[in-house]
Image 1 (tube, helix red, strand yellow):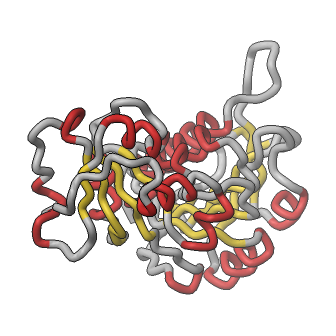
Image 2: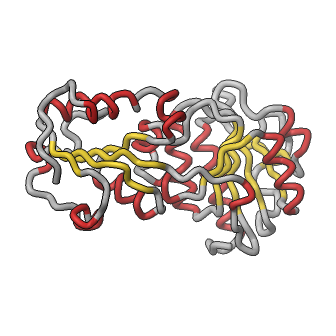
Length: 267
């Protein structure tokens, strides 16, 4: 482990703080990951650790064996509590922070199973909703999550936190809606879109074939390019006074209907 860092003016600390800004994360292709579980998920998903920061005052004598930190080439920095508070998003959480270089996949990188189930997320803005959908996608065993026309960095620290790190273990691609639609049609994957104007209740379509479920943004729902190019538009019937549900809840309802029809088997 490198020598203890106690100064807020240390260059490595300033670098971590700079990564709190989306523009810097994008430019450097790095992100800040807090918590042992989330860091372990990143490593499990094949994403590289750039550097680690550990606060013994919070972490205690933890050795984090799954990270094998003493056999790796990345820097491991010991920091005091005040420095940790400067670089952390969550106060006193685990006492370990990693700078991760996330893998950025493209559509052509995807290797799908024989009967894929996919989640398409268009223009979602709230990190909490994206993170929740990543957890649902993980639970449903989807082949890939395609984030179309993203309005939030998919490796935003708040997405990582809300997803419990599953943003790293899911197969995730960010692209434009036009690219995604063209790719789906080339692959012969059925496109099912959630839309308030749809007339088909969500259990009616056949989800046993290769399917991509598309959900829209929190404020405007799915865009016309998706409803015009879908194979089926679906709606979740609601009996109350509000006319919509949280996007992550909607995605979960439909994905698990697909799993029910498939006998709760992966592709």
